[in-house]
Image 1 (cartoon, rainbow, N blue to C red):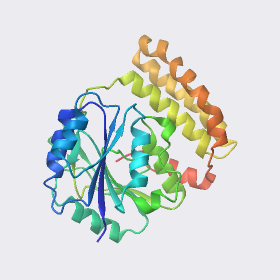
Image 2: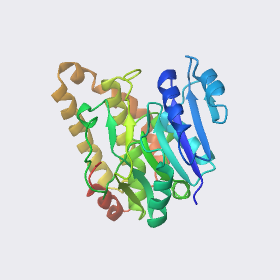
Image 3: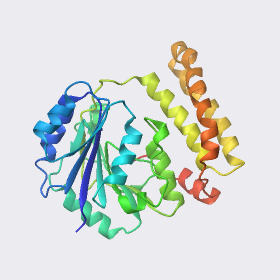
Length: 288
């Protein structure tokens, strides 16, 4: 039987986190540990966790380091072999989920990441959906509802802490698939994702995603393909902004300037993959 850890990173969403922890207390069997990173929280989250979830391993970042760095630290410090990744506003709907996950990972020794359909307020048509399609291999996943094999994670670069927020999932999916591991969508369980709108900005999310995808291309894609893909990336992201209107177009250069300071870091810390492996990742569907 695998040892299980649950990891959650949170920032000033006390009520959402408290609800999620309430569900985690009901899991049967329970996880071997719960890790919670309070990332720059100022709303009483730390006190709530200590009072309501005293058995959790609480990591406190006095200054926010970002969800990506927080998850990377928890992956490296966890005691479990299988790590159930959740957001502070998401949780599994099946209380026997850990039994199901143990069976899945036992049957698929190359499985690095399993991820699951979500009933999410972000896409309200999913709330009543029951048929989420067949299981399949994908190239990305969502950390709001995924299970990762820790021993595989430790063999690879893992989540890039410099990303701060966004794009760590496709970047890690690329690492897995290019090295012969699987990222697998399966409806063996479902995630209830309340998708809190607090602290979210669509333009800011776009800028993080665009910047981090560029950095991922420069670090992972072999030359000279990385330069061609980087050029296409600028063009496609500007097209995305164009479709959103003048406000987005005016602000599009913001992520260009934010990306510049990281260019040298990307080339210095590049861990380039083979083009065969990179192409294998490109050919898979992005998500389920």
